[in-house]
Image (cartoon, rainbow, N blue to C red; front, side):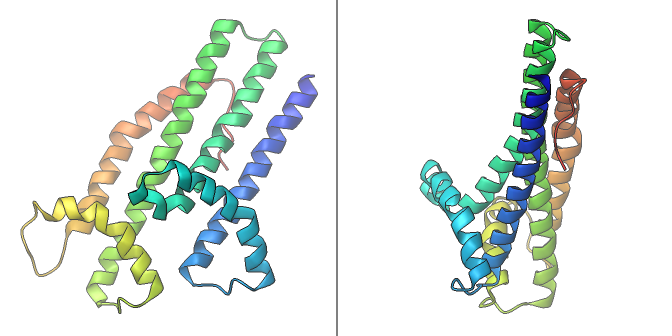
Length: 208
């Protein structure tokens, strides 16, 4: 049984890692308007789109455009939480930890996994805002698909800031947004995730 549970944990870790990168490839393909009849693109769509559509049903109408990104976050969350939870159960069944320690480890896995998702979201937001600031300096053509995607992602993050910032020659709201997300990540999310990691010991999350 211990070997079987470790095999399940390792298989889940690797399988979700591979699926995570398949989703990333699928998202990138949507940015470049890839030919849907290409065999590789068609296979990627068959593997990822059903999961995207399932996520879409649970999202508010205004957020359904981001179902692909939400599905990616769910896979990252599962990759962090599921293998670690199986390994904690393995330790319990071997008599290496008690029920209270198992409960603490589960709580730690959940806190740490949630922290990883928050850190991933904030890092993604910082990248989007950083790229958008660069694009505003070179005045790109708005009919470019990549520019349209970046604008769609950046605008909801920047609109609240722009209401309170003075008008300037250059729009510095993306830089302000990057700084805010960095501070939230460093001084709120990271300490919470670190605390979850302490509770999870000696089990390590699968985060590669």
